[in-house]
Image (cartoon, rainbow, N blue to C red; front, side, top):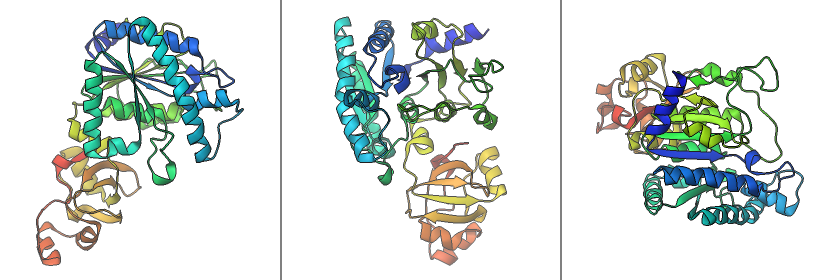
Length: 379
């Protein structure tokens, strides 16, 4: 049954996004593993020859730069990281380009920052650009633009797992394949013989995060926890995810022949529209609204809009039309949405009944703080 399910998923995926991590692409000393890149390019090329729409999200720029500079550990300062990424990115793309050229294929470099996907217009432009690249039968190779992306300005994706999830969510019904250096999700520390790999996750549960035992690495900044968050993001939006061992020869061939390898995370619920996917996972949040338990139930169980009476508090610096995070009384995010009112206005009408809005503000353009059409659950 598991094999048949996997076969159906890999055969029907409209777009395949493959993410490969730094540890898979580099040797222990940080030098780029060119042979592994050649093998990966061959596997991806076979998928493309089969008529698949394939996108690669590749880490490795900083790892490649570390190798070229003979650095023993990942730099801690952002300017140094930017420089190392700039030095390594050229080497990384050169390796992919040469490997694909020998096969008769083309590589297209795409460097993104978080702002490229948090801004609605640039989000759509990115999607259109990727679709055009695919129409030219080239392989888009995406990496975070580490040369200009800095955490202090909140423009970093955090790691390429989240970037890969955001890229996958640009398309409907994607299959995201996260290649790492472990076989999949284990129910305990993978280093312990007592731990068992979980082949299938049919329903998302918060307890999954408790199974994560992180491995420390000098070359990468992602981990299983970031992969689980990426899997949750994509499956919540209607896509499927596979986490598998990228160090295994022929891993992509095994996956796309329907073999039970790695951990398969099934899509949850119905497919989301592109707009809903952007609201829930890509847009830049400008503030936070805390709601009571009754409002949480109305959003999660009944699909209702957010009304002022259910709001306990609000924070941030947002205006009408900005994207805000909606959290419960424990501070856990339950949804995101586009606000009909500014922070200043919500501060005045929170906890009030809808009929009181006009009396307090002098006008009532909207009965809802966030309409259900502009709201997406995220938990």
